[in-house]
Picture (spheres, rainbow, N blue to C red):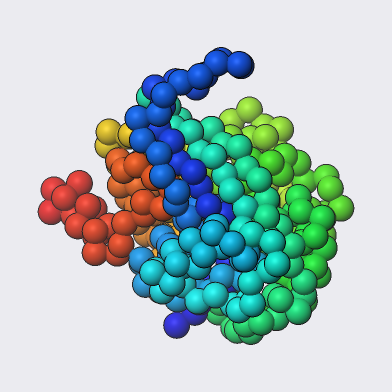
Amino acid sequence: MPKLLHTGQVIIDLVMAVEKLPQIGGDVLAQSAGFEAGGGFNVMAAAARNGLPVVYLGRHGSGRFGDLARQAMNAEGIRIGIRKPALRDTGLCVALTDASAERSFISYIGAEGEVTEEDLNSVAAEAGDYVYLSGYSLLHAGKAQALLDWTLALPATVHVVFDPGPLVQSPDSPLMQALLPRIDVWTSNSVEALRFTGAEDIAVALDRLAGHLPANVLMVVRDGPQGCWIHQAGERRHVPGFAVHAVDSNGAGDAHAGVFIAGLARGLDAPEAARRANAAAALAVTRWGPATAPGAAEVDGFIRESCGG
């Protein structure tokens, strides 16, 4: 079976639930707080829980946060490709979720912000594998060029998945111009797609993305509770979402991406993989925390129940 090689960043989230964010200089009390593995871990956990073998091809640190990251990956059966920890510790993100279920982040990058081509070659990418690139990786001077060079050298039989994230805001940088022709699967939320393309609606964003990406690229743009849009080879389709009561949106997009890739890897067509991904994201927002993606059996049960069967 194919595997997922995730080249992004596993960090540790300090997750706090608050009624509302404080004003500048103010203070609020949190209803809960805890340390959880986050960042790229969320996508990997979602994929692994849905039957796809996963390898982490990012660095991990020496220290309490590196220990937490490795423990979390080991618990999910995620293989750690770069075996030796870096000298510095893994980074930290403060994730604040307010009463509207919206989340705000403050991140500090640690060991995961650097990588070499030698690191990336720790595990061979084989035909049919999926290589996951995060837009966050392109912002780290100690990682971006090595990751780009390694990606461009991959054989065409390896599928490159790109998630721009919220900080890659246009196709104009030299790194993006070099990467765009190699992308096989684009996955983002609607806000990211609109910002990247300068479009005012998803339809226009998909058209503009198609102009930047290879002809047969598979695009997935999430639209919150409404589900997602998929676009490939000039054909576009809306895949409806599932109605739930959301309590925490943290990690929902990651759950969607991981389950979508797992579906493609097991041979599902894009609409069916997207349907399962929508179900996984819907379940994820009903739970507190970043890595709340359900497993395959729970996704199946949720879809059956939602469809009255």
